[in-house]
Structures are given as C-alpha cells and as structure tokens.
Image (cartoon, rainbow, N blue to C red; front, side, top):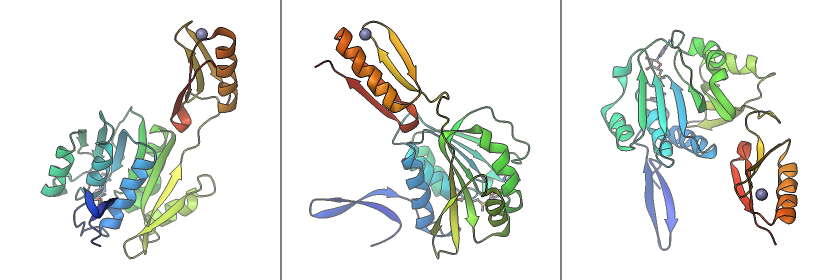
Length: 244
Ligand SMILES: C[S@@+](CC[C@H](N)C(=O)[O-])C[C@H]1O[C@@H](n2cnc3c(N)ncnc32)[C@H](O)[C@@H]1O
Ligand SMILES: [Zn+2]
C-alpha cells in the first residue's frame, strides 16, 4: 500500500484520510506520519517548529492541528522562502492559524506555551535550541529532536541531555535517522490540577491526585444530590459524577 497517505479501514475498502505528500527532501512519508501521530497523541492545539525547511513537518502538524480548531502552528526559519508551494497550500487549507517567524532561532523571543515543540533547524544548535524552548513546553507536552542517530549535532545533544531528560527514539525512513522524543513531566500539584467542580453550589476543590478528586466528587454528590464535574487536565479527562 502506498506510504504517502494515512489510511482508514471502512467496511469493504480503505479510504485516504491524510495526504502527507511525497516528502522527498527528508526521509519520506514515515517522517510525516511519525510527527502527525505524535501531535495526535497529545491532542496538540499549539505547536512550535524550529526549522520549517521545505514545510513537510509543518504540513504533518497542520493535518493534526486541524482536528482540534482553533489551533495554531508557529514556524521559525531563517530562510522561510524554502517552504514548498504544495506544503504551504496544505497548511493554509488546514484552516489553522499560522505564524511564521523569519529569524535565527537564537534571536527569537517567545512568550507562549506549546503542546509540542519540534527542533529541526541548525544541527549544531540542537542542544541550545532544546534548552531555549523547553520552558515554553506545557507539562505533559512533547519535545521532539530530529536527526537523532543520523546527524552529529542532534545525536550529541540527545545523548548529553538524556540523563536528565530520558528520550525515546522513533526511527523513520531507512531507520538511520530518528525522532527523539521527550515528554515533559506533569507536576503533581501544578497548574494542571485535578479539580472537582459543582455548578449547582459553586463548589471548586483542587485535589492532589485523580483518585482524591474522584473520591471528593462522589462524596459531594452523595451529600448534596448535586452533579459534580471532575477534570484531570494532565490526562485530558473530564467526566461528571451523577448522584445515585
Ligand atoms: C532540515 S531543514 C528543516 C526541515 C523541515 N522540518 C521539514 O520537514 O521540511 C532545516 C531548516 O532550518 C533552517 N535553519 C538553519 N539554521 C537556523 C537557525 N539558526 N535559525 C532558524 N532556522 C534555521 C534552515 O533554513 C532550514 O530551512
Ligand atoms: Zn454542589
């Protein structure tokens, strides 16, 4: 089956659901499918790519972001003209917000938070780019380094960061190169809390864990007869506890 597409099985046939293009300049459509799948895994709504290049990564990200509007892609590159027309078209057609920053990554100033950050600009700056943009990754978000095992810069960067930031690597194409992926941990009592909310009596309780939130919600519904909503942001879980 042609690898240019992501396919979905429906009764009696396959349909094309995502067209990643031929992706010649990088390692073929597996490169795109890896990025698309990683973006889907964190339900990304905001992505930063450092190194827009020909636009293959941007296109893969845009096809994931369009599943969760409103969504935004931020692309940094010193040569933004490099992006291919078909990829520019695909990002625009995805209907997402697209912010292109034509600057050296070391000069860029950013004050946003992202669900996923992709480092693929100057290989010799991979280590510096990781440290510079890491504070802008939300807890639970993914940091992806391209070219691990293939280019010296990212390989040395990932190997030297690994004791503190354990990566997993996803080989693509001819398997010589990988996406090295690190998931930022979620602090137990951070902004991404486990909350119980009751709209009927305006109760809001921040809990230390999901288990505690679930217990609190159940106790509240039992005592008051109200419905209580439980939100576990770190796991993107929402449900309502209904009184029995
Ligand atoms: C390998 S390409 C990126 C490929 C791209 N991710 C794709 O899928 O098409 C690297 C890009 O990084 C850009 N670049 C190199 N050094 C940079 C720097 N210091 N700051 C920003 N961009 C840089 C180059 O202009 C080039 O377009
Ligand atoms: Zn209540």
